[in-house]
Image 1: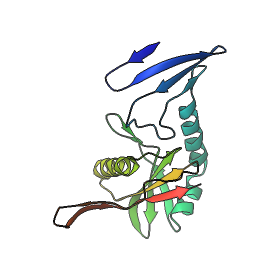
Image 2: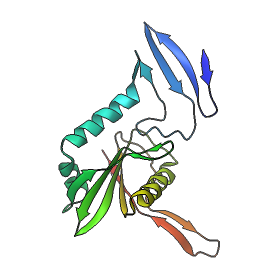
Image 3: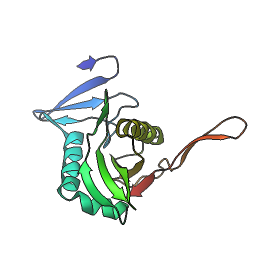
Image 4: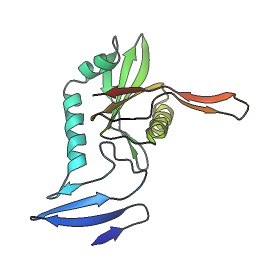
Length: 171
């Protein structure tokens, strides 16, 4: 059985009373997997995502200090940036006397478009909250090759017109 819409198609597999839905969409915004899997009515990627958010949300100051020593957690901000754009974690923090945004993204596997996703999230968050954004991507599995920062865009004459620094954390 195949269900499809404009952006995504799903293939349904029945295995011992369980249903699996595997997304075949390209460039989807899943942060823990490139596929979306449902098992017995539960979205497995969503469970990972929810549990990690809950773990960090139980003590956000510890995670902020781990990645940005000296920073102080102020509050959690909306993860919904725009129509269809949701990020994993977005906190307002104080760093060296300035208010900045602390953006954390979880990634289970390599995504060749990750730098562009971080750019998109960074720009939307910066515009929505009128603040500098510092982004981190935590890779949950060892990957051979991941997109390394910075993301740089140059003109043909070599003039740099954009640079985004973000930090990869490889667990």
